[in-house]
Image 1 (cartoon, rainbow, N blue to C red):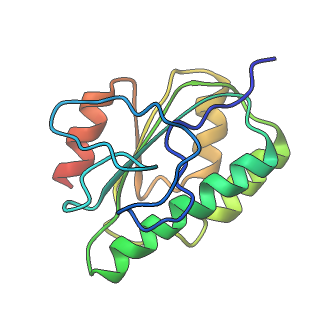
Image 2: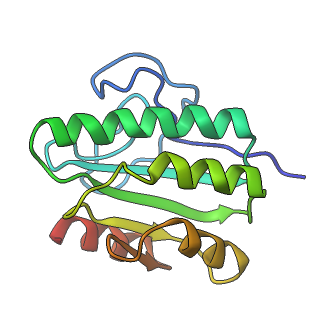
Length: 152
């Protein structure tokens, strides 16, 4: 069984420094790799990647850090633009799915675009049950997802 790997786990949540669990942050056109989450802070865009099966404790840490970033962007009076790349993730356990649903239930607000990149199949069905369709859109192309998140 392949374990999860969150490329973008931020431990301190400030977006300016601190430590991250993983050193691999892929460079993409025009994006700045920050310690932890990856994206344009000035635009309120945060991007995360995950793969494999997720352990409950690591998932909780990841979403706690993600929530800090979203709340910081909201505190600055801006919409939080999120891109979650789950193309290499697996369908998750019910415990993990429930945790994710609880963590994001009140996190996003109206005007926050959430782009989720994932293949079709059981994971897509699972994620659609977790995320509100009012704020989220599903993509199979990361560039298209980022463009949508930035233009909304």
